Image 1 (cartoon, rainbow, N blue to C red):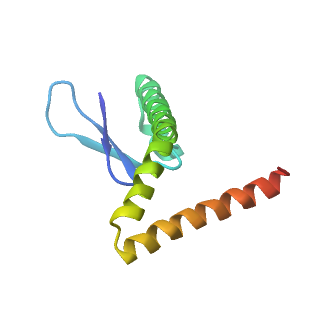
Image 2 (tube, rainbow, N blue to C red):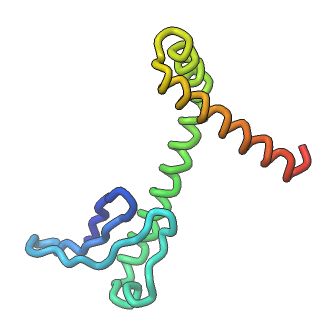
Length: 117
């Protein structure tokens, strides 16, 4: 059985014997890439390859769901942040908020120009 241990930038994959005992570290995979090296692939049993593919699919789907949830919450989040900006943010917090908004608009405008909108 494989275990997938979440780290900030990586997924650590270890083999756990079914009867217990010492776990065998197999590799660390960067979350941004989700690719296993040929060296590690050669060490895997057939069912472990399927297990890893399923785990990678789950991670990709989870990231997509997280982004979609952030998009859905964005209008209310921006409204709350702007209310705070007006009603109590310190000057530093106001500059932080303004910087994030201006940078976001700059990136959106650049993207729209590039695709001809």
